[in-house]
Image (cartoon, rainbow, N blue to C red; front, side, top):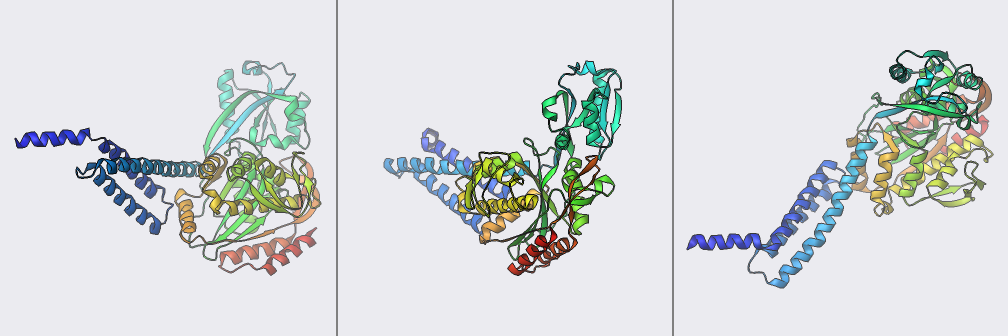
Length: 503
C-alpha cells in the first residue's frame, strides 16, 4: 500500500509541468552564475547579492510549483514569473557570453600577413604557371620571413625557384614594375600604401594574380603591471587599412595614453605620423614614424620606447574599419571642433565649429583630415585625441547599456591589444566598483617640417623633425602621471606654447 502511494507521488512529480519550468530556470541560473565568475567583470559587492537573490528566487519558484498546498492560480502566476525571470537570465547569459567572446578576440595576439603576386593590368601573366621563367621583384626591407614563406609556396606552385630581383626601396620597387624591368612583384598587402607618393594610380594599373595568407604569432612585448593600482602607458596605433585588424600596415595614428588608476587621470600624447625618428627595425636609420607599422607593431613600440625613453606597457591597435564600427555601436559620439571644414577624403562629411554629433563614417572623415586644416597633421593628431576622449566618455556613460551587445561585437573584430583578459576585466571591475569620473588631458609633440631621406620610401619626402624642447617636456608630463602627480591646466598650457613655437 505504501509503495503504491510513493509511486503515485513520483508519477505526479514528473507529470507536474512546473517541474520542467524549474529545470530550465535552474539551468539558466547556474549558467549565469558560472559565467559571471568566469568573465569576472562584476565587483564582488554586487555579484554576491545577485547570487543570493537568484538562489532565493529559485527556492521561491520551487515552493510555488512543487508544493501541493499551493493553489492553481498561484502556480500559474509562478510559471509566468519563471518565464519572465528566464528571459532576463537568458539576456544576462548572452551579455556575459558576448563579453567573454569579445575579450578573447581582442586579446588574440596573432598577426595576419597577406602577400600578393602583383602584375600590371596588361601583363600576359594570368595565373601562377605563367610566372615560370619570369622576373619577380621582392623587397629587402625589415623582417622578410613572411616573404620567404611566400617564395617557398611559389616555388611549390611553379615546380622551381622563381627568378628574383631584390629592392631596397618602394620607389624602385614600383618603378621597375611600371617600366617592365620585372614581370611581377611580391607585395605584402600591409605596405600597399607605400606606393601612393610615387605611384598614386598603383591600385588602378595593377592586378593580383594570387594571394598567400599567413598567421604569425606576435611577440609578447607587454610589460605587465597591476593596472588597478599602478600607472601604465598604452600605445594606440592606428593602421591605414580597412578589414582585418591583424593586418600589418603603416601606423597613421600614434598616441601614448598614460593612465593613473589611483588619481583617475589620463594623459593622451599625440605624435605626428611623419615624426622623423630612429627606427629599431631599420638599423636605427631615421625615417617617418608611420613606416614602423609595415614592419609590425613591435617595431612601432620599440622605436617609440627608445625615442621617448619610457616603458610602453601595452598597445592597442585599430584600423579604419574599427573607427566606423565602434562609433556606430556606441550610437555615435559628440566631438567639439575648433574649426569648420569639409573632409578631403569624404566630401559628404561637413564639420562645423563647435559640437558635432558624428556617426562612424563621419568620425573617420574627421580623424583622417589634414589637408583642409591650417595646422595640417598637428591638428589631425589633436582631432584623433578628441575622438578617443569622446569614445571613452561615451563608453563609461549609462548609454553603453542599451548598445552593449553591438559594442561587444564591434570591438571583437575591430580592436586588438596585448593586455591580458584578466587585466581588462580588472579595469572594468574597478570602474563599476566606484564609477569615478576620469580627468582626461591632451597634449602633443611637434617639430619642423622638412624634406629628408626616408629609407622605406627610397627617396626624399616630407618629414617632421622633432623639436627637442617640446619632446622633453612631454616626457616630463608622462613621468608625472607615472609618479602619481596630477597634470594641471598650467602644464597643458605650457606644452601648447612649446608646440606653437616648434613650428
